[in-house]
Image 1 (cartoon, one colour):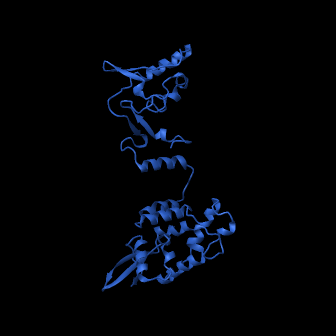
Image 2 (cartoon, rainbow, N blue to C red):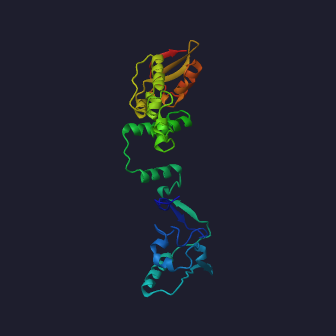
Image 3 (cartoon, rainbow, N blue to C red):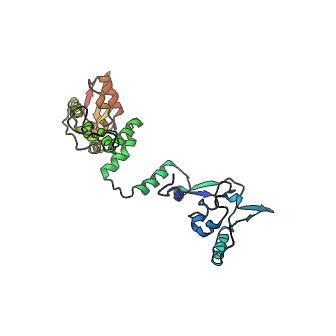
Length: 293
């Protein structure tokens, strides 16, 4: 868990109680580093290197006394290190409570997946600078109201992590480059951008939607740009009843269709269209043209 970067020991610190689960030398329980790193010379001559704290001392008449054991006598200059160690642990309080953990990123609320994610994100990718469009898109997809599996698909799509033939070729899953071509049009390599936007079959669906809604559209250069319209949506959907008829007031952005539902809407039956529009709507507050069903 902590291999390579050493992040876990920086955010999770042992909280000493009775010492039954805290290793005297190897756990971080006193200060910001373990005693083995702080006193490597003494650690090397200790015969208790793997012992927990409760085995490195004992209770005498209700008072805790340390009992450190060594492989040999000290050199003169090592006696100073021993005294420094004893001074450090002299006032440590051993209690009857169980040992615990302290989550340093949030000492008040304790551990949460969010605090861990924020910490690791800042640690592993401090060099990444996102544009305002990227920040909006990556934040908005989780608040769009669509099913979580759709959000996950769009998130993978924006990161270009979908198993398209282009990605599989780069990962060595597909060996021959000619096998990376789109199976639908067989003209270009199957990338996320091609599959969802620029393939002839995908473009025909986009243009069919535009004609059905009565608007003129130009396909964006990439998938992320298609979602950028969500802050200025082209249509918004509001479904309701008027004079006994079902109507939908639409103002939908490109990004709402990038879930992949439209790839299945070949024959455009009205119930399926209504279902997809309900799933893919962004808001219901804006006007736009009303389409009767």
